[in-house]
Length: 145
Image 1 (cartoon, helix red, strand yellow):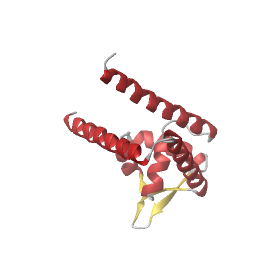
Image 2 (spheres, helix red, strand yellow):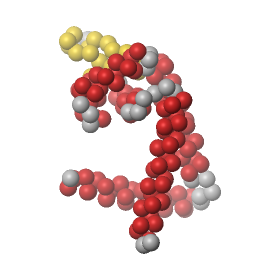
Image 3 (cartoon, rainbow, N blue to C red):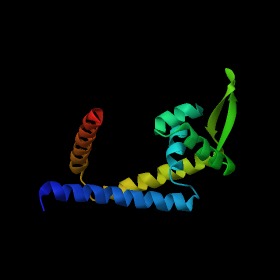
């Protein structure tokens, strides 16, 4: 197996571990796949209208409607009328939604602390440079697609 193949395998394994952790968190919090992305988006961008949510998450407005309806029933989000345009509905996180986001952030922080346990500051700096380089490569490739 080449060094590149080994690196790819390690990279994919790392993301699979994170995905498993996220799946456990979603199950524990009674969230459906995709809802956590919407929760985090709203946490940073509220209030937001449905079209901006759809655009940011790269899903259809109809998909956002379905997810929001489910999240509203669960008490995670609420819709309010835009004071500037009474025809528009804006979406906000409820206190329960904010609590779930805070729990997720705390859990992810612990996860990443575990990932870097035993690393020296120099190793963490080197990892950061590698991650930035990978991100830049992905961004460059994304421009081609």
